[in-house]
Amino acid sequence: MPAETFEFQVEARQLLQMMIHSIYSNKDVFLRELISNSSDALDKLRLETLRDESLQADTSDLHIALETDTEKRTLTVRDNGIGMSHDEVVQLIGTIANSGTAKFLREWKEAKDSAASEELIGQFGVGFYASFMVADEVTLLTRRAGESQGTRWNSDGEGTYTVESVEDAPQGTSVTLRLKAEDTEDQLFDYTSPWKLREIVKRYSDFITWPIRMAAATPGEDGAEPETETVNSMKALWARSKDSVTDEEYSELYKHISHDWTDPLETIRMQAEGTFEYQALLFLPSHAPQDLFMQGHKRGVQLYVKRVFIMDDCEALMPTYLRFVKGVVDAQDLSLNVSREILQQDRQIEMMRRRLVKKVLSTVKDMMSASPENYRTLWKEFGRVLKEGLLQDFENRDAILEISSFASTQDEEGLTTLRSYVERMKEGQDQIYFMTGESRAAMENSPHMEAFRAKGLEVLLLTDPVDEVWVQSVPEFDGKQLQSVAKGEVDLDSDEEKEKAEEEREKRQQEYAGLLTWMTERLGESVKEVRLSSRLTVSPACIVSDTHDVTPALENMYRAMGQEVPHIKRILELNPSHALISSLKRAHAAQDTEPGADSELAETAELVHGLALLSDGGELSDPARFSRLMADRLERTL
Ligand code: ADP
Ligand code: MG
Image 1 (cartoon, rainbow, N blue to C red):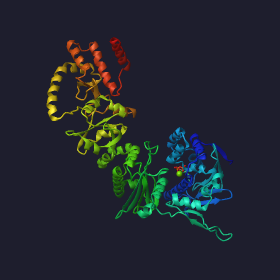
Image 2: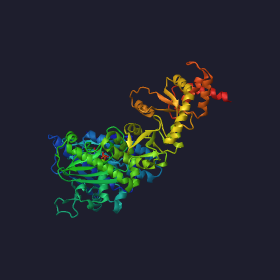
Image 3: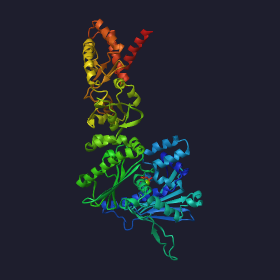
Image 4: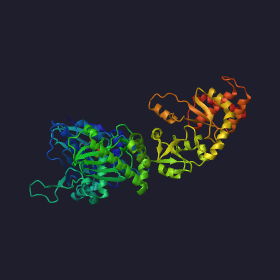
C-alpha cells in the first residue's frame, strides 16, 4: 500500500511551528519526553500481557535503546513495548487530544515576546512534538504487540505527515530524529555524542525502571556486535535512602509521571513498616492542569507493587478533592494481579489512603508557616478543588477548614484563614460572618454589608461557586458558628445596646405595622414577608433569604445545571431610618388605601422592591415595567 499523506490538525500544526522555531533554552528535554513515552509503552505491554494471556507478545528483554549515526546525523530512541496500530498512530501522533492545548496556543499567541512563549512551552509540555526542537525530520516505526503489520510515520513538521504500512517492523516503537545541522555543529548540543546522551539520561531519566541501553564507549572486537551498556541506575527513588536523592532527581520523577514541565511545589516522602509495608512519594504541583474541572479528570497517583508499575490514576488511593496530587505508592504485600475492584474494597488500602490524605493535608498546613509563598500558590491553583473536600470528607473537615483561605473585608488584596479571622474577632462577637457572591466588588457594595461596615465587623467574601454549596453544610469552625450576612435576622448589638434597641424596635414596629402588612399583601406574589431591617444604614431596602432557604446564587446554579427548582420567595427588609421609607409610611397612613387599588403608592412599593433586587445583583421579574415606572417618576422631578 502506498504511503498516505495527512494534514496535521490545526492545533498540532501551530504547536509544531512553535517547536521548529523554538529557541527554548533547554532542548535536552526532548529526550526525556521520548524516553518517558517508551517507558510508558513498556509498562503498558507488561500490564496487557498480565491481563490477556493470549496476547502474542515478546516480553523476554524489555528495554529502551539509544542508537546514533554520526554520519547521517541521526538519533534513534527504540523500545520493544506495546507499540501502536495504524489508527493509533494517526490518532495519537497526528492530533492533539489534550484539551488544554487550545488554551495554551491562545496564550502563546498573546504572549508578546519570545521569552514569554518559551516560558509557556515549559509550563505546558509538548511531549512527542518536542522532537522538532532538535530535528528537521522525524520517522516513527512501530508495530503493536500482537499485530503483524507495522506502520511507518514520517514528517518534517511542516503541515503534513505520511503514514504507510510496513511488513517487517519489530514489536514496539522506534523514533528516529534527523538532527538539525546547527545543533550538531555545536559540540555542546551534539545529540549523537554518547557523552552528551549519557549525561542527559543520568540527569532526567535515571530512575526509569526499564534499562536504557547504549553502545559501550569502547567498541567490541573487529566484526563483533558492539557491546551495550545500561546507562540508567533503574533505582526507584522511593527505594533509595532519603539523603541520596537530590531535589532535581525528585523533580524529574515528578515530570515523568505528571507530564508537567515545571518543578513541583512540594515533595512528600512516606514510609510505613510493619504488617503492611509501603513507600509513597507524593508531589504537590505548582500549577493546575487545564482539565482539572473536567469530567473524567484522572487522579495522579500511580500504584506500584514491589517496584513494578501496576496502574495509573489509582482512585483508591486519593479522594477526588486531592486529584491534583501526583506521585507513586509502592506496596510490598499486594498481588501483581490486583485489580481496581479489589483495591476499592481492601481494608488496608483504605487505611493507607487515610494516612496519605492526612499527610497531604498536614503538609499543606506546614507550608502555611514554613513557606507561605508556596502555600499561596497552592491555594490559588487548587483551593477550589480542596474545598470540595468540605463536602466529601467529613473526617477531615476541620483539617481542610484549617488550611483554607478566603478574601475578607479586612484585607484589600490578600486572603485570610479562619484561624486568623477568629483571632481578630471583636469582643462579644460569637459568629464568623460571610457573604457569598459573584465578585468582591459586588459584595462590598451590597446593602447587606452596611451594618457590618458601620460596626467594623469583618466579613469573609466567598466568590467560588463551590462556596455556595459547602457553607450550607459546614455549621462552624472552632466552635464559632458560620453566619451568612444575607440570611435570617442579624443581631449585632451588645447586651446593653440590646435593651435599648429592643424598645426602639418595638416602637418602630408599631409605627410601621400598617405599612408592613399592606406591603406584604401588595407584593405577596413575589415576596414572603416585608419587615423592618436591622442590617441597613444607607440603603432603603434589601432582599434577605430565610435562614433555611437556598440562597439565590445556589438557586441559579441549580437552574444552570438543568435542575428544576421551585421559585423561592424572599424577604424584603425596609430601612426605617431612610427618608424614602419613612415618607412611604406617612403617605400610607395618610391615605386609606384599598387593597388591590392601583394607586401611586402601590407603584412606589413596587419600585422599592425592584431597587432592593437590583442592588444585590438580582433579576427583576418585569424589567420593562420597572423602567417605565421609574422614567415616569423621574420625569416628574424635572
Ligand atoms: P503524552 O505522553 O503526554 O500522552 P506524547 O505527545 O508524549 O503525550 O505522546 C502521545 C501519545 O502517543 C502517547 O500518549 C502514546 O499513546 C503514544 N506514544 C508516543 N510514544 C510512544 C511509544 N514509544 N510507544 C507507544 N505509544 C507511544
Ligand atoms: Mg509523553
